[in-house]
Amino acid sequence: QVQLVESGGGLVQAGGSLRLSCAASGSIFSINAMGWYRQAPGKQRELVATITSGRSTNYADPVKGRFIISRDNAKNTVYLQMNSLKPEDTAVYYCNARLDLVKANYWGQGTQVTVSS
Image (cartoon, rainbow, N blue to C red; front, top):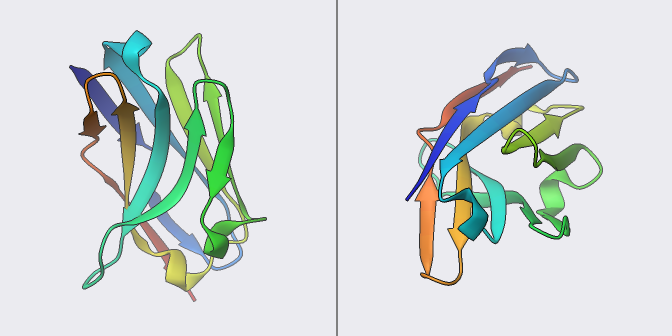
């Protein structure tokens, strides 16, 4: 079992920045990758960025060059630094942990990010 708690969402003007945090607890040594996904109203949940235990990163095209995913293993926390935010980045952002050995995915409760134009 893995528990994920997100924080850092909020309201920001276009062009601004926010940093999301996701603190993991539980069976953290079984986590192979963590990531951020988002879901806008009326749309499907989509990948934003992922980072593996080896720190390899992957970004969705719409956020490349603007968002940075990182992790602090000492704090069991993953971050998403979001810069140059656009109104289309408005969504609920969810933290995800993937455990390949048991083929499991865990999700946080989500944090709202709203970008005003």
